[in-house]
Amino acid sequence: MKNLKITLAALAVLVSLSACSKTTAPSADNSAVPAPSKEVAAPVAPVANASTPDACKYLTKEIAESVVGPISKEPNTEGSNVGMSNCMYLSDDFSAVSLLITSDFSSATFDQAFQASKGISGVDPVKVEGLGDAAYWAGGTLNQMNILKGDNLMIIMAIGAKGDVQTVARGVAEKVLAKM
Image (spheres, rainbow, N blue to C red):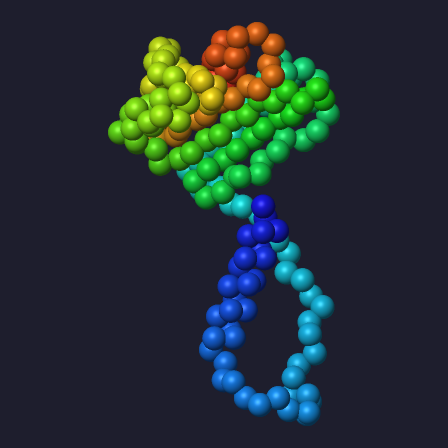
């Protein structure tokens, strides 16, 4: 994903530069053409918004292992970006648990997401009491716990976890919220 973004950015710069240059007849004299640079720019790591909590600070390896079993790899944080932080642990048997936090999320937007979830998941969302400021379970094709805490939307998913997925996601949510 990062390589794709860098490639697209480089392509956009090249197209912009070529659009601005004059078209001239080719010349046999290449002395004015600079030699290509061998330096490659380092990829830019995504930067989370200062107000967006770091998802991996709250979804720890210990919490993840309690849900999906032994984990031998570092968490995947791909998808973290400005205003969003993602943390996903993949177990050795390919079960997974993830926490996505999006900042600057209003209660009105949360209510709209609740209303829209049936169209996405195929089933009615279920309000969940006792988690954050508001919460709901989006079952069906989504199978995720959605929690509003302050101005942060937290989405917890547990894939391949043993037991009822909604119960497992709620347990993860309780542990994560206790750390906030």
